[in-house]
Image (tube, rainbow, N blue to C red; front, top):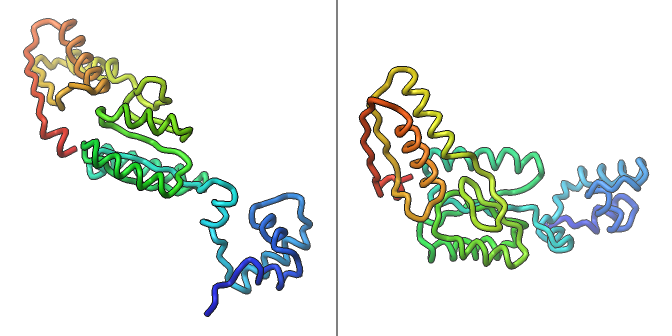
Length: 223
């Protein structure tokens, strides 16, 4: 069976194809009677608009590319879920990919997203790809980073230092005196440096405490 086209809908509704397009895009300057005929034709013909063709005409795809180091981790999975929720509310599609903490793999993943003409990109976590992010940004593609900061790039994050410091202080005030900090190596990652700094600041302000620090690369690799 041949694919139903916008021309078929226009013929059934007795209008031109541009009118069908305006009705389906929500144009308010079309009469109620015309809108009704178009929607009835769409329903009868079971017409599905070609979103790819429409996005090419509008030069927008209503899609967002999101790059994670590894989406299997609990934190990144929760980020993905939230992104999907809010993207759906705005009628956007989200395309996820992973860098695998490897810049060569990340470039390949990012290029795959660019080939799909995403309207913007979000980079969450990691910390060794600032030059890549800047290059994408310089191509006039909107870029936002999450849980990290990159110079001159809009970011969404929280105060890692004060948050961890407050956590330690609350434990101290509840009577705890023995603390262990377990985390990824902090080299090259501002958010991790801030978290450890918050821990160190709090310990320095507490008396009669024992502490141990463990930096484990496996946490970075398996997050």
